[in-house]
Length: 146
Image (cartoon, rainbow, N blue to C red):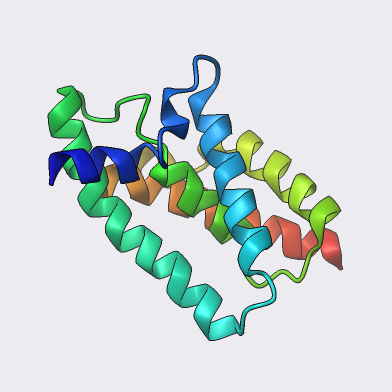
């Protein structure tokens, strides 16, 4: 089960990218969005929710495996946060690129309460801060679209 958890937590190995693994994980989130953007809204929400739940479990197991609270190779949180940024926005590929940039900037800044959410235990803390950033990103992207 640890191997499966690490595989999922690293988004199929994307987290092992030698440069900017979080950015690579965000790119996986953009790809997931682009593959599912024509799904019914409920299915899209369910997919992000499923990735979130699996991510909490996988990030917890991977953090134990790597022996660190938020190890660099764990990028399932970026996948979920990026996907949440784009969720139900109706953007196409260009809008997805703009959403990608918005998410990455917000992920670096970690506006309140995202930074505090990192202190939650295990995989919940790993996932929660990027989901908060993703929520902010979604709001900013909706404002930009208007």
